[in-house]
Length: 200
Image (cartoon, helix red, strand yellow):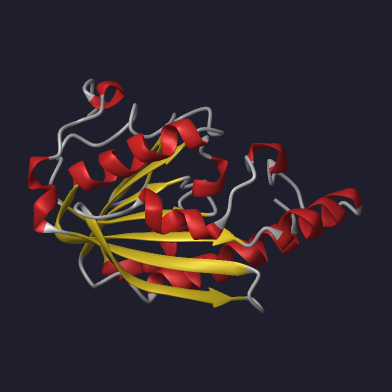
């Protein structure tokens, strides 16, 4: 990661932290090296991260990050997590898999648990492409954005399993923050086919 990558990552994490309560148990999808867990510090009770670009497992004092993709790689305590974070991740999920991802999030969150999401505005793709050409950023995987639009997010995380708590823009409107709450109606959600086999 280059300096600008790290700046953008810190900005996303700073926004997410405002919506994570003390003593939080959080699943971080796209956890990288555990920067969110480090930023939470003493506020983190337990963290489980998933990162496809990591080759090996990373362990901290109260968290683990495993290589792979959610929900194929997931913790073994469905229905008990306070929050799931997807910071600059959802736009990399193919449209065919977005609803499966949302169902898995509902399955792992406890009632009242939150999904905290950041996604870029469409204009960001062009900006990032230019920055990549100038070698100011790296590793954005722009080819995986699938024409993603922030307006799609509420349709992915919709009723009856979720309700939207907050939608705001930051960084001059170039990024969007969404916070959803898992409703009690999600109690009957079952695991997607790919989420049945769990790693512990």
